[in-house]
Image (cartoon, rainbow, N blue to C red):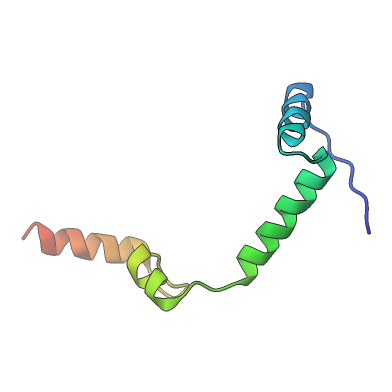
Length: 76
């Protein structure tokens, strides 16, 4: 397991410590769990139905052009 030192304002550290304590964990455990969750969420793909319903754009799409095209159609 690796270690990490993070510089942050005292107020943020105090908040992190208090919040982690409320969650029943340490600040280190809280950050480690969120890093793990972020990695897992970024590695997984959404179900095609969720993608279709969410309105997210694919990596090959041009959202700005699609927006302007839709607005032009809407206001003809």
